[in-house]
Image 1 (cartoon, helix red, strand yellow):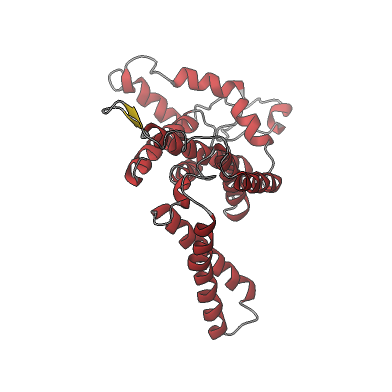
Image 2: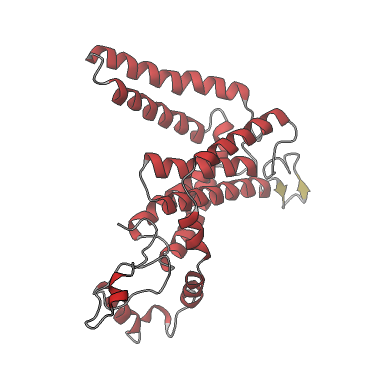
Length: 287
């Protein structure tokens, strides 16, 4: 299987490329690009949470322990003394970081259900829930972050499958087929539990309309096609056209026609009443 640095490097590369596409298409506001890209990088290491000594597993339970322990403090801060809050915080953190960690790894095994597409879908939904209701991001941004997580997850599974083929030795390792699979057929109980958890997670996700409308908008794909290659000389540094366009955008004199929106610009005088009152679409998560 691929090692941790490889997963991080490839996950970052893929997430960065996807983030560039969303930014070029004006599909998401600039302040949310980094947030969704991080989700992709996290997704690229998530399948290794079932590996007991792996850094993703330890980091996940550390993060969960900190998050839940502080959440408990916020709930009971008005009812407990400082000494009681210290005990509650430490007890909650230890319970999640060590007790839950131990139980989780006793009940799971590497390249089991967490190395499946079904688990990737589950984490897609979980990411959307966290971004919307915990991080308070726009619902469109939440679903986009979930999609980045899912793609990163698939990148991890694919890399592990590729590393199961010994090209130099012209042989296929015994691990081939265990990394990239739809479900875990060897342990159907785990698969059933994950399927139920996925359905429950989906029922808790935010509405999908903004996300679906955004990624299926024809102007978005038209803009991506037009921006894929430079119109003229590369970077526009030789003829100055690229710099002129950049300067025009900065000064608000040029706007995108993408349905997911660009930042609103000033309306010229003589605009009709209908145009004045018509809402101007904006990128996902734009204020």
